[in-house]
Image (cartoon, rainbow, N blue to C red):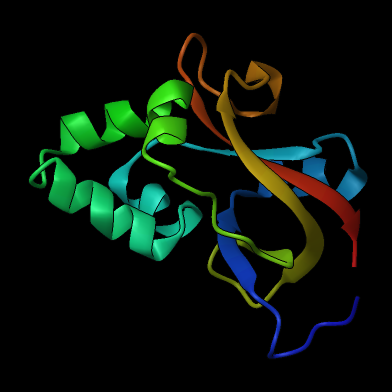
Length: 129
């Protein structure tokens, strides 16, 4: 896969520690809190708009619905597809590109930056492009 403008790329900023772990291959996933910001980026846009309208913009209800596998399935809420993830080291020009292998919700590895006892978005990475 080459980096082309027609590809759908998820851009994420990393601190140096997580950058180094992903670059070395030690960390195969990236974690993000389940917030409105990341819901808007990781769920299909139309589904995200539907959720906001359905729950009348009540953020707590929306985020609880996103966290519930059963409710996501019942409401047919889908994950956004990306071809790749472009990581930026801080706010510098340093970038690296990885295959995007999907998104899920679960408990990540605290050694890799996931909070303990809190569900997060898990962004699965493939090989470096």
